[in-house]
Length: 269
Ligand SMILES: Cc1cc2nc3c(=O)[nH]c(=O)nc-3n(C[C@H](O)[C@H](O)[C@H](O)COP(=O)(O)OP(=O)(O)OC[C@H]3O[C@@H](n4cnc5c(N)ncnc54)[C@H](O)[C@@H]3O)c2cc1C
Image (cartoon, rainbow, N blue to C red; front, side, top):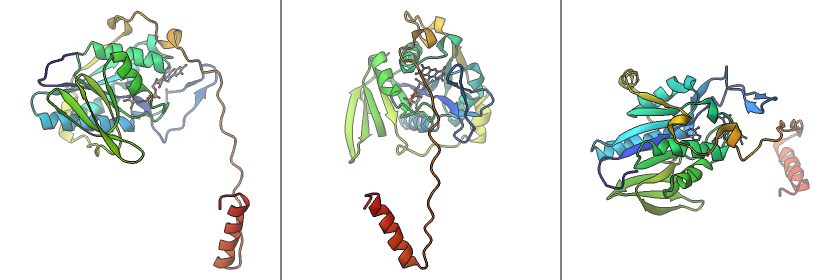
């Protein structure tokens, strides 16, 4: 990573996830989500990270660049192109059967190794995915990269070689800053992601999407199934919900009284 201040190399991590409305199925043999035949989209939370990176690039207006980084299968290329259509300059995909079955640790190790090959000044992530939803990857990635991790940012800015964020808390926000290189995860209140314009969609067709394999990363540890430190031991569907209760009452007042009684019996009131 580069210590000096100048045009920034901004990386945005993007996960490809099954469409929230798609029918999802777990393969009972592998206990993995079946991804074939399911519509895949950019993780919606990552659109805020892309938008934050683009806004920063436009504000700096000094030749700073935005690169998309995704660990995914080669079939995700056209979805990664949507991020390029929004305005990112280029993309790097880590595609290798050797990363299949990576747990959080393996994902963080493999993504960090990918990012280390790219000489980034600022890494921007979403706060969570919509499929595995751990929200843990940004912190783990910052640790594996050995850089400060500023999470849950609703606002970010860069000046004088430092990134400054407003970090959301339960009761408000705190202002935090760190020297670059650094990692920032961006919340949904940071911005309103833009739609790709027709010009952006056409331009994206010519932008470079580089594919890397594990052999390009110089990893000395196993990732994927072989390196996983967590093991998925069992899966179960939630029990079916009991049928709701209909309260029949002769008039609104009696109905309200019956509902109050119902809630009191369950100690909600
Ligand atoms: C034993 C085991 C096996 C698994 N096998 C697989 C598998 O074969 N295939 C699979 O897809 N998942 C697999 N998973 C799940 C996988 O480990 C998680 O999806 C991954 O670690 C990311 O976690 P998350 O989605 O909770 O990220 P979160 O922490 O919720 O995501 C936060 C942010 O991190 C970034 N991010 C997350 N994942 C990626 C990515 N892949 N590329 C770029 N940026 C990313 C995004 O910016 C995202 O907004 C497995 C998990 C376990 C425990």
